[in-house]
Length: 402
Image (cartoon, rainbow, N blue to C red; front, side, top):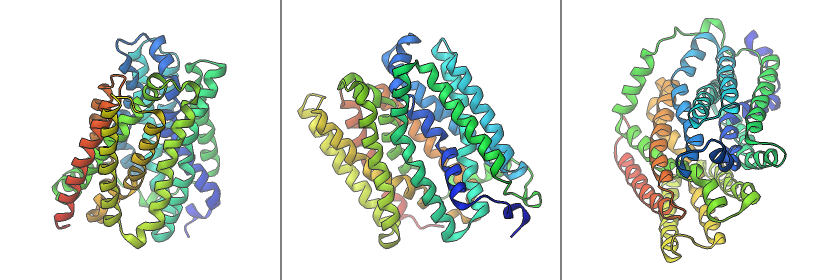
């Protein structure tokens, strides 16, 4: 073992720190959801649906950040890339906390996304530096098991802050969380990329990876299928506060119901890890997509039957069932798209994640912006996207992997 790895922290501490860093995006998104109504009123937005931009703009920053944090970490080391990204993230939090217009708020959110991308991208590289093979897969699964708690708890944390303060304090809380985790990371985690293993910083390698990924038809169809499916998730996430609080009047209980849906995704991820070796990614993904189509058909039929607003218990049950297959596909679609690209795994992962995130953002935002205080946009969008996602998945399966 090299000297640079010999000083590594214990596995348990490593897993906790990595999960906390990976949680920056989920925490920054979900903790804000209960506050969107207050932000909408305080910043006097032109349209009630403009509050959704507080969510989606962060993800657009994430897309941009994914382009360069990986190559930077390969050239200058993992720790400098993460620490620099954290400074960008902190700057974004400060801008949003003091904003008095939606434009300034969105600038801060964009910078938060760019900065948070460093932790999201580089933590996987840190795991790869320290572990390999089945051990790496096991550690990543454990990290995700810890990580999934964040989306379940974050809205409740945001609601608790709103009980005693304003939405601006939420950004201060996110900032404090980032600073605390980075101090822990800086003091305890050694650099895992030895100087002799560092590569020259070349964006041209990213361009080549982009062309190779797009040229592989199987990868292109898997990526498109994933973008269509995750567009449903983005549409839900962007409009969740309006659905629960404005349409159904759940008030402070919004955080509880949001946690129920997040638990569905966590349960699906656990189910996937337990079954994927026995059943296989292809069969499990196909079953999940078919289930998604079936649930979406029921969702739209019941939405039409009840004039756009099914009983709350029905809606909650349908959303729980709808996001279970999405939880399975979160992991499998990326893995399927990556299969032909072992030679350039790191760059290919960056390109695939970027394209999937960007595609789902555009699609999901269009659906969410159509919110009209009924569930018609989400229900119809879910059915259309699930059918298209299954169709593009079938096209990918029929193409030989080159």
